[in-house]
Length: 422
Image (cartoon, rainbow, N blue to C red; front, side):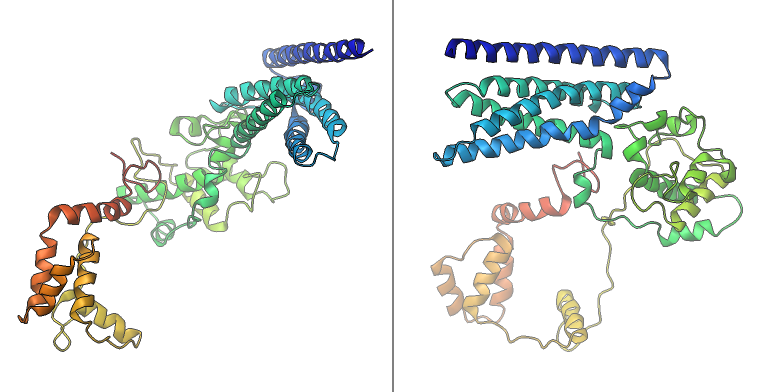
């Protein structure tokens, strides 16, 4: 009887594996036919759009199986194997459906992205691993099963990340850490209110503003990662080419430009852009209209930046006037701050505290005991100035201490928005 039971399980696993391959091939064939025909059959479109719903079954159930397996291992008296087996069957079958529907979705919608193949193959690998978990779940030994289960959970995580990138854009996660970019600055608003031809600096400024709006509001669906409706707005060539329904930007004619029409639609309209979020503000729409009215200038060559960054060039501040006996510039700045905030100047510290602070601030080291004793016994009035010069002349110690601060200030060894590269 036990022999027949094992044979029955092996037959079920083999049947499921064969079914997975058949359905995957069917999905790929249907997707290929849909792509060849140009206008996909409505059923393939419908099944493809069910992919986001179906895919949540294997994602959630695999995680639940892992939790139950951990509970099973920590509480010997609790027998959860029956529940684990049921969940494994559902997650394995739903992973097959998710792969098939995903193949249909990829070929009935526009996803011109390098991430799409990664997402597809990660999904197929996840399906195979889910079937493997179902197969390994029938073993008496749980070591192989648990190892395979952990790998499957990792594969689900990676596949989900690629899927979120396709759906929501490449900055879906990183965008949570970025500060909100202002809609338009004062210089841009002044440009919109001017008439006549634009100067070269004004063209650069308005182009900066327009491409900032496009980057933050449109690239999630019309960028390199996802090309909905065959429309990309991240490059000059693609933006003026338009999508599958034609051009969306008519230079000189904002009223006839599809881009303006869609961003002005009510948020509940099916054609409104962007599809998600609050939509563009009145200032952003006005900027886009003005840009198109002026011929939609898009200069060739690299843009200075589509993100606002702080000025990094050296600047000479206005040094406050001398007040009392405070002639040192830094003391003048401090004196102004203290006066504005009604802070009294503290009393000078003793020699022992002073030498310790100078050493720690300048070179990051504690002064040797003999140096402390010699400094405290030094009768010269300018001994503190002499001490500072002596410590600052320790170039190697100074460089080692301040290297980390300069790395932070210059943001070395990073690539991205607001960082110095190369």
